[in-house]
Length: 205
Length: 72
Image (cartoon, rainbow over all chains, first blue to last red; front, top):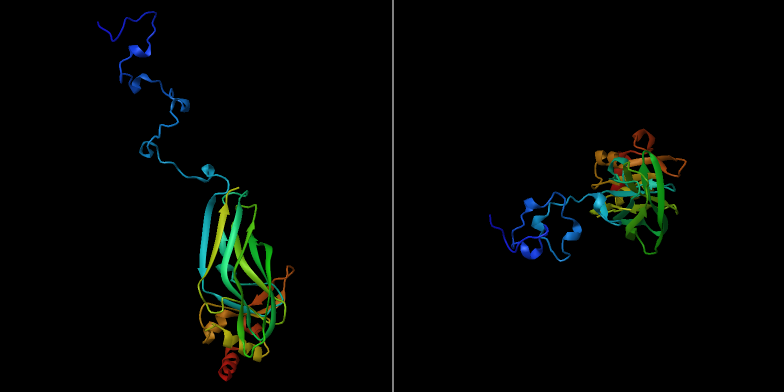
């Protein structure tokens, strides 16, 4: 029976004695190929890799792991020297964190104003979160506007309001906007019934 | 056009205070007014408004508001 290459001595087969392309995968033991055996420049084609399941566990810290959005056309106005919700409880923005370690970024793009007034109006604004019936609030801004011209006019106090918080929960969070009339006038949100957008993003710790 | 400027002016003229209006449409019928309007009956321990959507608590009716709106 013949053999390839030079005479084998002392049961040692060196590289030169192995014919090119003669080592088959069947000759490799299971799990024999380690990461160290793969060249750093191998550039293994994506088509030869199994589909990678993108899970929260393999995303780096700082990744956005969940986004919820909501559009509303609700107009609201009140006259109360007490904190008053923009939206009814059923219509609030809701997010349920996937981990209690994660933080939540909330942004609302909504026309806030002083109501249809003459004279000076002074209002306070804050975000309210409700978890299992328990409220937490985050005061965001104090707004003052003065309309000295005749007639009633809506004063715009700005559109953007938002906050970043760590709710330490995996229960549903309801998010609402509240205002407080500080000057016996009115507070107004989106008086013309335009489209307003609300977003809550969960950021991995 | 604001969805409630005439309504709020009418409420002011009628001396109605401590109210809330929430609406997605122009308020021009009793049904829309009743769906949009609440009166604040108190304040809870956290400083939040306590609202009532029961017309018996309001001290004003759509007919009164509408009549006042027509004067504006």
